[in-house]
Image 1 (tube, rainbow, N blue to C red):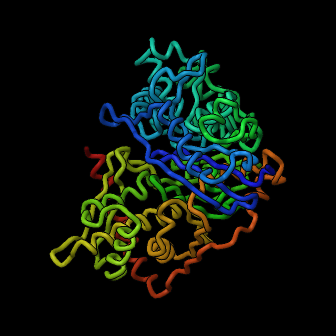
Image 2 (image 1 turned 90 degrees about the vertical axis):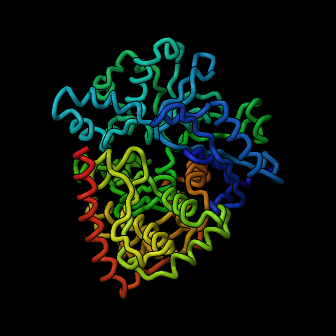
Image 3 (image 1 turned 180 degrees about the vertical axis):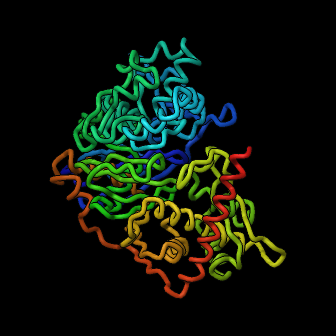
Length: 500
């Protein structure tokens, strides 16, 4: 059978997905299963590594339903970035994986920061990211200190997509997008000896796999993996990249100046640059993309979970299917823009706020609530609050917005997409498709097998079907005033959190 499809696998925090694409990146089929996140203690977030692989095999088989595995020309893998997925010399997990959402690494970061007032600034100056407790190096240091007997068996420290690729191919490797944020070196596009030294990991440097280009070939599907997934043994597999870089590639956010918002479990808003940029200092993230591109990002750590919370608490009778979300849009759109003076700050994450300011104690809240507000007002405020957070993040980056390319689960909502356009005052383009992380991984595979000449060519290839939302100029005043309130109240939230 002549291979004619690409397969992308995307193992996020909340779900594992696989999708089949034609050679132009048009989505043919997709499948998803929820992930089981282990929380043995408050603030911990782990995943059983064998369960993660089993989920990947299930979604691949579902995505291939009715399609012979021999029709797949190449496979790409992506997933939630950083964390620690440790295996021994036989390739077996030595413990559950620690995910990026885990907070244990904060104790290590605090210990490193205590060495001097400029230590964290130095990390940012090299890495371009505010170091997070779930990043690979602080988590690894914590595990080595807290579980020395367990970690003594570790031979390789992988990340999520690297573990899945290893199970597919037997190849041990990392890619530039994750090595550079471990923390690593954004300019050198890889690991940093200085960062290893700061976290006391020089002696463990060999635990971290060699770094390779995201669009390079890792190896081929093994017979054992073929038997579990339904893929053909020998199918090429690309090295792959982290989920945010893959989403950028799939969304066509690859040229300098293009803005991208990934509205998923977390909400990333960033602008593409042709060189690494570290402004504003000590805020946000800097993702290394293939082919000398960088994505400067500000993050609200809770994106779509804000709407999930509102649905569950305010409209629990609707359930959680597609019809429920359509009903939510109808309810929210029945209320006026600005939610009749009600404002919501979408800081649901246990980690708090990391952009446009850092406040670990910041928490979600409503302001302006009075007796005339009903649940539809609160719901509309939640939609708008996430949009205000997106505008807040772009304001911190400080680049004019020509348009925002919007992907992730939130982009499926026409109401939310239009709200973001109205609040940000910029057109929003929602490209066609549903699984953009998987699509980006598949496009990297397209380059690895020679179907595309470059990542830029694959990212910018026209695919059609994009939805465009123009901002309503009549709402500029309403949202301008509301956004000013949002920012003023955000400062008050941060000040209150600082007082403990």
